[in-house]
Length: 316
Image (cartoon, rainbow, N blue to C red; front, side, top):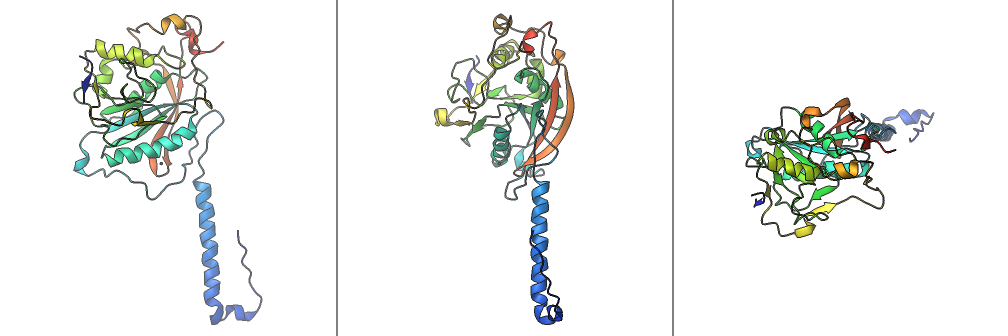
């Protein structure tokens, strides 16, 4: 059974000797303090101005910190023994990332979920490959995490009752069809899916054959069934399609839904051998950033494509 419930003033110095008198010392000190304050603010503005390269790589400079953003208490036993790797497949959606990282950091801290946010930024010239980027995230997330969330950058949970805890019994589909604002078919497992690293490895990860948008989740559903893993979904959530906020603007950013050559036929087939075992990629750089007080790791990644096997990784 597959459906069990479950963020320059200028100093004006008079040349009169009276300026140095005791009577004017207070004003002099006040002026110097104001200059130091303005210089400090100017330095902070420069050091906090994060940016991006033209090719899509994030710079090393972190965006400004926000002092009131909560941070996790590492040694607090009430947070439990497990740690989540929140894997975000990513390319060019910087406006969404600036919202996503602080939002999810605050959300998970409120629920006392130990976590780290890992953004896998595709910087090659091939078409976007969400599944391969999640595979990279699994391999690069480190030994300090024991489960992962395959998480879209444009989907924010609004209901605090949603469970992001360790899915010990089986994969837990947070963005289930009855809650997701867009996709409602029974076999949908996209958006937000939690798995233990053991279960993800048992599935051999996701297929690397899906270049462009869509269908990789449907193929992964079949992998879950083949691995005989029971799929769990939320229960008792009454907010319906308002459970999540979908921040993607389709009018501004079009999805790559083109189907090239034999891709039309191949997109519905099961990939029996591909996944973690045939993933090919290079990590160009790894950067630790802070966005509004929320830490994240950005891994700039170049995927490799065998164009004999999947010629649709490029658009003619």
